[in-house]
Length: 144
Image (tube, rainbow, N blue to C red):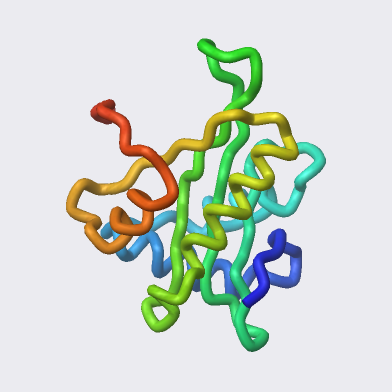
């Protein structure tokens, strides 16, 4: 398995992966959002939105999107790991862990001391991994 940065040639496979991720959370986005998000992800020089892909046997099998942003309580920027997805047939094979570790490495290279993310409380499969690679916080998320 290879973990690599997203590239322009990845659009179709990336879109299929992200569409599956969004379906897991019972949501969709418009074509405009797919296009704008992809453009931001591949414009590494001007965007704070970034992505890694997991590739196995010349097929994309996972993705992670992350966002670098300032934080009012720190001098350094922090990383928000927004989306993490692996195809069902490769789950349990280290894809999610490898993608998270790639974000950790990128955060270290950018001087970002903190990486954080959210998941649904009942996402037990993902939480088993998250409990091994991070510390759960006691914060509760609110939405408008």
